[in-house]
Image 1 (cartoon, rainbow, N blue to C red):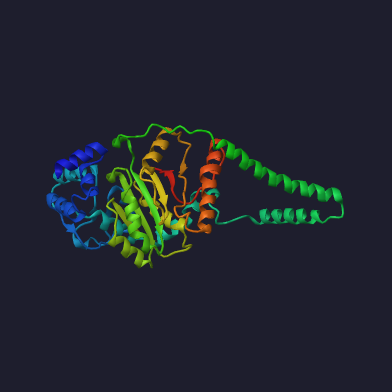
Image 2: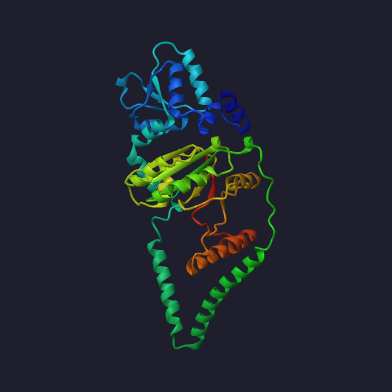
Length: 380
């Protein structure tokens, strides 16, 4: 087993412990209990309270406990090179250890429980505090709304004005706007015929970065098994996957379904704390501080991603300049032959993602994101 883990780790460019856990060769409890025994420190197999200040260090795999009366001050759940650093520090230390070991899952749960109010607040308002121009919560300003209303009223009034030249000018203005939209679609259709040359795929697993997959779910218990199978079909090193299921605090059915039918890939169920607005963007914001990957993909519960999608996206990001921050996969409706409504839906998606978006991209213009199968560069 150790030989297989070592070979897998070398092939994928990860540490041996990450390969052991990701491939399911050893469960978390067994691994971290053995690590605690090796370090001669306490292993915690029950919920622990960590201080709110410990959230800042959680990314490094340790956090300060809230109540030090238990005999230790720090809680550790190391991974990768952190395991070896902790071993070296323990050998060099003298006296009673001031830390305990727990599993990565229990550690992350403790960190999220440390300050749920802050998590909820940051998920809803952090972007506005960092850069107000990136946030649409405030909407249009009062002056902008007034100017827009005056323009609309003036345009509508001019269509019924007693002066024929004014009516003609307004009609020509509206017709010009309409034909601009038509010609843009025609040009996009022509541009979509250009042949795209794919970059050379990153076949070496050591070149592939860690990929975080975020799925915001609400009342999706019925598709939990299908979702787990779709994730396990990804042609990507399992040790380099970081799957985050984000569910609401009152969605117990979805949580139970995910626990009953989990994917084999390393994953985590993130409970979004109570707060408003209860939306998909807020749920994604809850998960993003926990993301380990340098690339991030967002999927919906009903998605069945093509197995090589992550590998192709990683290849395109590697071949693209740093200014390319997001990739949109083509979305396809898979039940278009069910009835006339699904057929129209499939036709609309095919026109948007396989023709219009493709043409806009070829012309270097802004394109439409589908809200799912979006791939982003992470900020590491």
